[in-house]
Length: 109
Length: 119
Image 1 (spheres, rainbow over the protein chains, first blue to last red):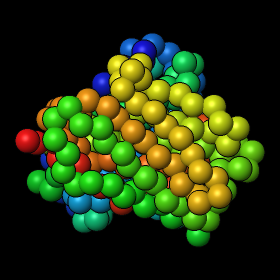
Image 2 (cartoon, helix red, strand yellow):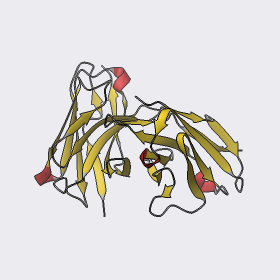
Image 3 (cartoon, rainbow over the protein chains, first blue to last red):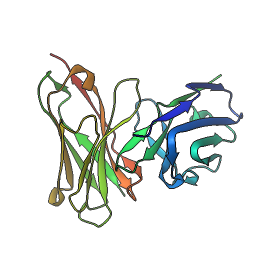
């Protein structure tokens, strides 16, 4: 089973700054099979990015995804107040199973 | 408009069996390519995938929990049901159902239902 490790665990930034979140897989993952989600307190996760770099419907273009193989990145170009949340990466495995990273909490500095 | 909503008991006792229902609208599980999953999240912790059911009846389970899980569907009612046996306090979590897009990622989620396991 592929394990996803996200870093950092917590990222403290100010509105207007750039955020870079990392997701590392224990073995190679097809780019098509990597997604990112945003979760705010008391809410369900929301799909942000699928296929490593495609934005989901309605997601602002300040969110972008990149990467391949074992290293993937979610970048938020200019943080807005509503972007402070927990972010999870997720992969789909060959055994028809799914796994999530442990999450990165993006907090206001 | 796609919506999903989970329902079930808020409190179960240890060793009991949990039954959760996901009622959805805006799509049909009889349509080729449609899939629904259950995912849970213990308080303050990460998401954990549990099970998936496909339009054609195929079912897939988390390796670590598969002996305790059963997923089923009632296409006429637009419902997916998850049962989990032998509940333990460590199973306390918010349980979500979600639609799977292309078999790869979760594009629509329910609001979640918190299940507490306690005597």
